[in-house]
Length: 142
Picture 1: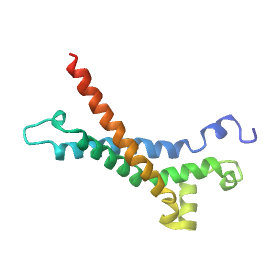
Picture 2 (picture 1 turned 90 degrees about the vertical axis):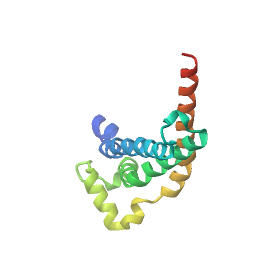
Picture 3 (picture 1 turned 180 degrees about the horizontal axis):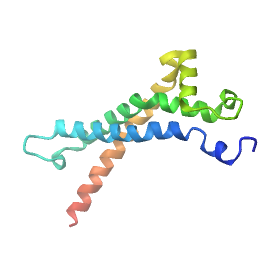
Picture 4 (picture 1 turned 30 degrees about the vertical axis):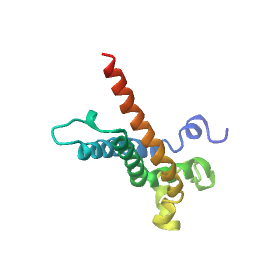
């Protein structure tokens, strides 16, 4: 109540956008890149087996979280620790980022990365493999 509707609901939104927009480019780009590298000569992605899609998905998940994890760490700090806000009740992404970097360094910006990647790799592997399998099923019905 003390932060107001806009500040309270949207705190950390910039950090979320800084993570999600380039992160999704990275996510899909790594997946497609791995699939392209594993596609047989004169073949297509449809020729790949499930293991290739699982590997591509797992690596895409690791790449996503590795490249943009600091933005997620900053977002979490902004959303959960209001004592880091300035006197006006707000703190910019960059102010929070610099404060965390000065205090904890790069290690602090990646705190929690290992468990996040351990969760993301199998989850993303299954997402992409399921998507590709579903495409094959739908194309077979045409």
